Length: 397
Ligand code: ADP
Image 1 (cartoon, helix red, strand yellow):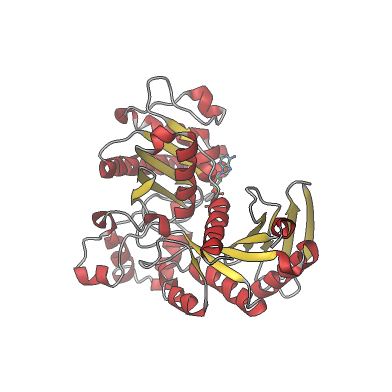
Image 2 (cartoon, helix red, strand yellow; image 1 turned 60 degrees about the vertical axis):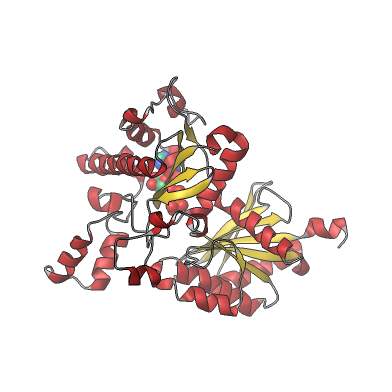
């Protein structure tokens, strides 16, 4: 391959959900996306593909006739053919939420692996089936295209044995009922950012708070996951936009046995009607709750911050100490009052916030004399691109 051919090679990153497919197109060695966008409204009558030329800031829109996921991917591939040329697309990197016990690293997707990963769909019913469906559609549309799975669980797979266990009979852990943890692509990015920009802290004990619609915490030592707040599924740990977070399992039994809820109703309650939305009755969106004057909105924010601080304490115990705290994702990056309320509860750990720096969303938001408290924007796409390249290079492509 000549250098100019290599310069034309492109990588596609996909994050496929139930009603949308987010994508970004990168140059083979590029750091920033050339285009990004999403197919949205999938499954409905007004599905469309939105594409943004990042450098030019130009946007285009195409309506998707059938509104299905395969149609969206075909339209995206056709657009790529026209824009970068058919031969330029070298690989697709997929965000895949669950890699089970077997996958601590990214891996090239083939039919057999898709079947293996299908078996994990029950563990991540909101994401895994859609992640895999996109890979299947692409395999049909473009059988020769290299596709790589980048797992949200992978970063946590090397946690100590004890951190992965539930106190259930051993038979269940042998059968895969373990604490897996999620948001691993985000934590991997933050670990890398700490290594390059804050090497001393990176070598120490850090709790990273990924606070978005989905929210979790990761306890890192020397850039590796030692414990995390999410468990077997992405329901555990912190309360989220619509998910309940950690819940006494007795509540589930009570709802089914005493209150007569069906299993589907309980699933809907825990995944879609709980968390910030459930407590406030107003919204799952932190911005809306902070803007609301209703006391229920304030109570939902208070529970969120209380539980985050409490769970950070638990991860500090897992790390046997703390050298710094990092906030990331939608709420963590943008929401100063939430950061302040969480840190205020952690004064006993030697953490204090600098109000001005926090309000200005500076990188370092701690007060003089406090342990570092940082705000670092996450970038899961960057990790998917890096991992996809890694798999291509290992294959000698
Ligand atoms: P997802 O888990 O869907 O990727 P995000 O990381 O985008 O979620 O986070 C979404 C959350 O971040 C929402 O609760 C939203 O209100 C909050 N958020 C995003 N931007 C801001 C902002 N500027 N101020 C306050 N909250 C914000």
